[in-house]
Length: 372
Ligand code: AGP
Image (cartoon, rainbow, N blue to C red; front, side):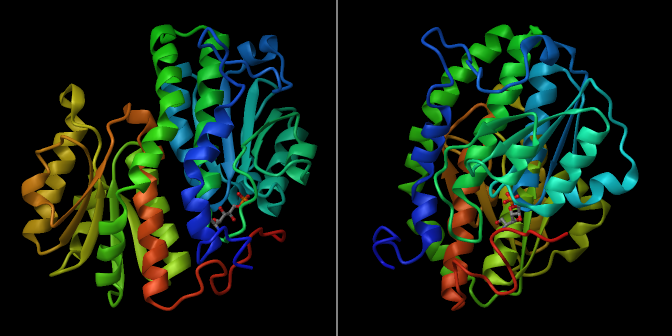
């Protein structure tokens, strides 16, 4: 009913708007007065966490994209090697797991059969499993050794939005906590990032306030067949997520690429007026990646692409090559997906609407996939 949708036309719009609160709620009570993390609720003891020598993340769809981003954070802050794998592929290749491996299963619903089978396999190999889940008492947390709940509240729209942002927050918390427990050299950085995380919900809110031009742009592209998405570093999984949202909602051909791979193939796809969304890393600290992606934008534009550039406020280098410029607030690099994903959600939702599609219930899809 309209009341359930809180005055919005679709649950998806309501859930996009709820993201600042969902992010804040997921941090609530997990940072103490001294600015350290308190994750006592995670029932895997500090002694055991200190022994962890490998992290393996398993998930599907959007949750898998959260896992891809988590890898950058976990390896950076903990120096523990981290693998991310589609849950549906995991157990079939006899993965190498041991008692010092920590397996993280990410799932909004907690009922995804592929993810459940992957975690069962991991536990059979003697690994500890930590679930990151949005649904209290669902099967995945019940069958795991420990759980860190995301506090997104119920997500009704089939396309995952607020659950994704809170999965990212939970992954950052786990990464920082592991770093804190294992005592890595990034002590100061960890405290700074915890401070940044506690401010990020306000930044997500600011992004939401500037989405009208994104909606307008989406409407103008309603008759296109293909949209490509490019990103690097944590912007690469963001590009994959942007493409997935467009597939499931707009039923358009959409693909995400690592921008560095362009010249290894995908650049052959570029033709006159093809919309290409590019997620640009922060230019601060004279980032090499930033300069490389600016050249990528130049290259594709020279071949006729219509460039839709998502870049940090104050990044002037992209201006000459952006046919459309979407600004996001400056954040530490690893946290950028929390703000960069939001315009892509709005973009896909508006395109779906413009194409007359059912936003909350896309064809052929179910909210939780309880068969393998
Ligand atoms: C997201 O928009 C999708 N509907 C889908 O990829 C989803 O993320 C995936 O099926 C995993 O679901 P889960 O988080 O409930 O395990």
